[in-house]
Length: 224
Image 1 (spheres, rainbow, N blue to C red):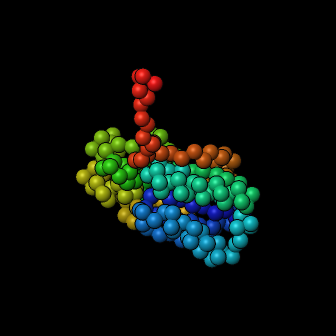
Image 2 (cartoon, one colour):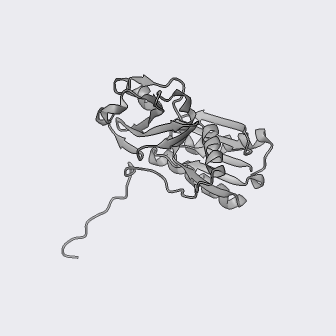
Image 3 (spheres, rainbow, N blue to C red):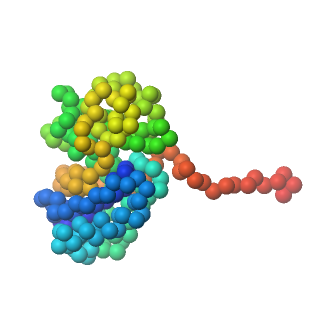
């Protein structure tokens, strides 16, 4: 296996190569407005560092969000094109799952944690997770809301992502150092799930809400 992992759902524009046993290379740029400019160079960097050509890839996995519309679609479209051009198998994983996986060691004593990323508009994307035997399982579907509207029981859980950093009054136990998706964590999670026989074939983006920009529709006159 030679797997390329990509994610552009958060402020991180991140790419990694995994050989089925370990991550060979990772490149990440933190810039919430440069997904389109930085993803291709980061892909080129990890392929070069891993000594891999695009045609060597057997798999491509992409983070499906949730995330802001413009940034998220950059990663998903790029992954689809890479898979089509190289013949690699295409996979999709919820980006919040990758954050939970990266922070699994910080879960509460009963294996609980919450992931909350910046959804802009003074909102967060979030999901609750259970950790067992080093693996993560989503307890809720990804959702979007204002931090003040989060279920009360989430406040006391270890919290991962930029949400706790931006809205500290809504999270009592932020997990230090894990703010954005890491393609290395995404790659490792995907490899484990594929090895367990899980299907990761869906690549529908998790937008959760309408894009900021939409076509303007002019109503037709009643007179035709």
